[in-house]
Length: 332
Image 1 (cartoon, helix red, strand yellow):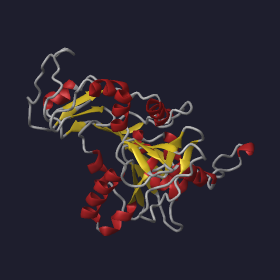
Image 2: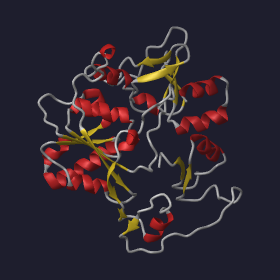
Image 3: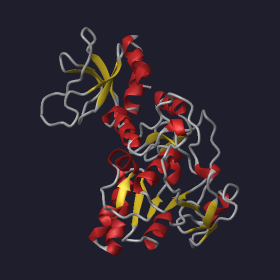
Image 4: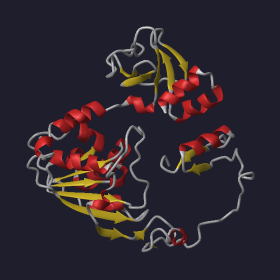
């Protein structure tokens, strides 16, 4: 994606460049002059993309001074691209952490003498209360809950603190934090619960389990939700889902959030779903063709499946109404 954006800039493809800049929060930056050539730059970035050498590190990645940010660019090619994906680039740090727990591959011992934990899969339909399940079954002494995003971690900390006190705040970690920093010595973790588990590569879950040395790993999620997506697309991704290793242990089939007609509408995918919501009729269907879908509706979310479809709709003016936007299903 970043390489493609740099090419669009170099070849002067302004229309395509405008869409790409907005979509990926991209900034094209001259490292010598500290001049922003395209986009809006805010905050600090750990890395940037340069045509000559590829990814380059930041001179001051931690933002210890107020000077315009600088990168280690080669002489004669100062132009770089920074984006949402280069704000935090943790690959090298995760690799170093992985080296601390791997055994000798030549003797067939990838994780040394590690005793595999018991795996439990809690599968839930949309709106069934998966987070509520985690809160109700939380073991404040011996459990750590893993989330995918910082926002989810903050939300869960708030809910756990309400039930169990301030001590619970330290019991919620993001997956990225665990893979980079591991766990403090002396912390006893018997159970590792992974919320929205299928948004993580299963290898990341295994690494987190190994770092924690938990005896039990609970995966909480929805088998039908969009899975882990490899946005780097550098090599073939294998074993990204846990279904080859663990079977569903518990089904949460009652949706409390969705009205009954919504439950019926998605019952072809969730065959056991039922609703406790008292609302029976909440949906209205309107048949629209591609030519008739209004582009500038206010407070409207236009959903598409792929990034290419998103680019196409944005280029045609969709999502320009007040409070409206175009998103992929995964982004939503």
